[in-house]
Structures are given as structure tokens and as C-alpha cells.
Image 1 (cartoon, rainbow, N blue to C red):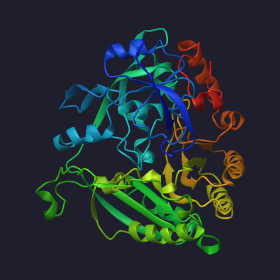
Image 2: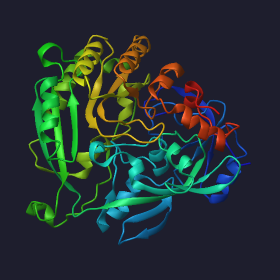
Image 3: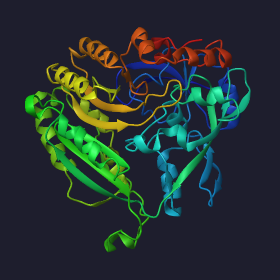
Image 4: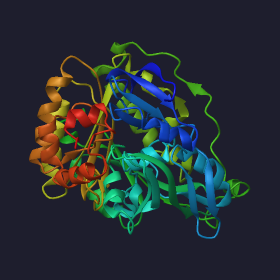
Length: 448
């Protein structure tokens, strides 16, 4: 058996915290030996927010050192790599060659395996869909020791069930990934301040046909006539022809290593209603950027500029609560949810609003509608408030993003995800003994 180390673990939100036996996977043979450890869950760079890659009293397989490139086709842009490869590594090597990941979330520090497990999405979901649309196939080590290749044609049930499947069906080994051809690493953007919720939705409708990328910051503390106010940023990939002369000397410029870091946890009292109100004004000013052309680092990954920015919420940590609701009656439901949040006393921060396109898969989060992601610092009243929010989202026909969830209960989850029984059939087929298990799988009843 592989050597293991007992370690305290948490997600990016530093809540909850637990203990597990960690094993490091670096070579192909390590994966086969890891099957002797049970229950087992894979963990990449730890950017899931809560207990998705935690396994109290079980085993956690660390995959970040399993990150080699295997094959590359310069003509088609198809890359095969090990599942522990990060988006940052893909960008660093292939952006100078004129290729970029098709789907980018809010951080580049996620592994390809983790991107599949959470079926990540980005600012262009209504155009590009989620991460599954960039994956051609993957190989996976199953509970019985078999290594199989899954694609839309081979083991199709296994392929689709892994996207949003939280790593509960096996250990992904290698991934065949389609990259996107680019001329520059810059984006042409437009920032539009919005006055209220009506203005927010009207502005999204107005510019959706013109821009592929859109995301809004919304002031969740605003009430009355200002409810739903914020700033929407739209963008398109910049062509070489349109790029300003000052950028043309290095049109495929890479990101620089960040020199900023938050070296310690800030006091928990640092984020309160007053400080968040002040910070909201600062964010609104920053988001309303007058710059027409921006580098991908600021466009996709602004928070990556500060290492360990999650420590800003204090040692108690935070949850990121992300939901999606249908567009039908969306304005009314959003207004009611925003009213609940503003009056909750739970200090919502970094509130990101987007429109989503059609969904796919069994446990994949997105579907056509509106999504809002809110950071809530852990405060005394939070755990009493989130079940009420869950019920409101459920009444609106919505669901919670499992890749970030920390508090959802099994009953509500299964009402939100109507294809869960279909997914459980795949789980019973490929892992009937629940060799692959995690805190969230036990919390939500994702067991064979």
C-alpha cells in the first residue's frame, strides 16, 4: 500500500475542516495501488469550495503531481494530458502557440480532472456551454481495476456521469482536450453600470448577441429602487488586426507570476455590513473599467492576482453559494431572493451574476437561466439562513452548484437534480461497493 499521511483538509472556503489520510499519486502504478485504500476520493489543487475533495477518516489521493503532457496536435489543437495538469500549465505552454482552453472558470489553478468532476463553466456558458464541450475523451481507473476510455461513443454513460460527478466514479488518468485557436491573449471589453434589476436583465438582452462573454457584479445589499444595481462586463476575444499598437509587439503575452499574497487570516470581524458596503463601492468603481482592451489574466482570473485571497474571510472561513433558476419568472424570483439576502444579516460579498445556456449531463449544474454566486463569511446566523434560501431556489425551479456547496441536505438536493437516479444507476454499475466516496457524497446520498 502507498504511504499515507494524516492531514487536516478543507476546501477553498476553509469550511468545513476535516482529517483524512492523504496519498500522493505521481506514476501510473500509484493509481493501481491507490485502489487498496478505501474509501477514496481524488483531490487536485483544492479549489472546490467545501467538502467535495474531503474524506473524513478515509483516503484522499493528491493528483497535482500527475501532470505530464502526453500528445499534442498543432493543426487540430487537440491536447492529451494527465488529469492532474492545471489550466495554468495549459495556458503557459500553449497560449504562446496560439491555443487557449475553451472553457475558463474564475481561476486558472484547477486541474483538468477537477474541471471534469465539477463540470466547470465560465463567462460564455450561454455560448460555449460547460467543460464537457471541450473534452473529447478520458481514461479512467474503475473500482474493479479496469482502465477504460470513455467518450460520447464509448462507455457513454460513464462519460456523461463524470461531468459534475464529483470524482465518485473512479480515478481519471488522462484527458483528450480540444483547445481553441486564438490570435491574441487580449479581450475587447465593455463595462455597463446598471441601476436596478430591470436594467440588469434588459442590458444582458441588449448586448448578448454582440458579445460572447458576459458577467455582472451585483450589489446584494442594495434595496428598494437600487435592488439589482451593479456593473456588467461584456467581452470578445481580440483579433490581431484590431489590437492596439502598444500590444502588437507581444500579442500572445502570458500572465506574470503573482508577487502578492495574503500571508495570514484576517480577523473574522473585518468583513461586516459596514466594510462590505464600502468594499462594494470600490468593486463597482473597479468593475466599471474604462479600458477597452484587457489581458486574459484580468478578464478571466482577477482574483488569481492575490495568492491565498481566501484568507481574507478569516479562520472561520466562508461558503460560496451559487444557484441557477429558470428565466421564466426569473426577475420576480431574483427580486425575492435578493430581498432575503439583503435582510439576512449574513454579509454577502463578491456577488457574481451571469446568464447560462442549455445544460447537459446528469449532475452537471448549469441549465438555461440566471445564476448568482455569493460569498457568505461564516457567521452565527448563516446556517439557519441557507436552508430558507435553498427552499426559495427550489420553489423557483432552481438548483445549487454541487462543486461549491457546503450545506445542502440530501432531500433538497434530490429534488433539485431530477436525473440523480439515472446517475445512481451508473454508480451502482461501476462502483457498487462505494470504493470512491467523499464527505459530500455521504452528505447528499450519492452512494450506490
